[in-house]
Length: 211
Image 1 (cartoon, rainbow, N blue to C red):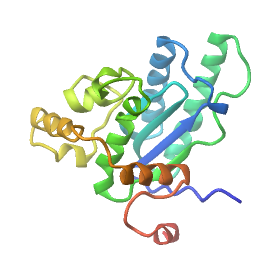
Image 2: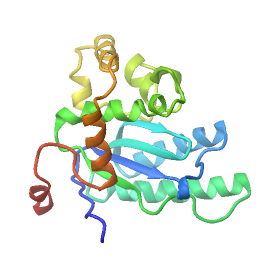
Image 3: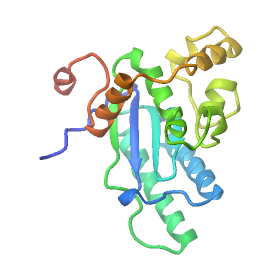
């Protein structure tokens, strides 16, 4: 059965998931994480993608971004993937592919789901048992979004900036969102949308595909 057609709309947030081939580790050292983030910053800028949230897990990554054009996200992921695989193979003396085919993505078409995606992404290390709190995990956007740590990768979405009239109240409101875990229903919605390349939100998929 063919995969569902990828839905991308300029300026509409996109939740991207890319996994290591056969779940192999994509990061083997601190330098690998830092190099990927540096390449991500450059590729996002070059391809007009505004990054809102991210997490780098051992064998996969999650990104939440708004593409500037229909092909911005695909261009960014192609450039980033090629550059990082070249670096990773040279550094670790390996050859061949690193990623599991094409990346998966889900259009976040309803503003109500944007903060759910933020939480889903930044809570990944806690669900995986890799940290006790999102602030304990260094390879995500949480310290920037929740505590104001400087992070040149990120461009806040308007839904995030509306959480407060100034950075302090905004970050406090953002931290409040993490006081409770996501519901099982919310987790299932995000996972099913991402794994199936389907839009996340209330608007019917068929209507989006017609645009």
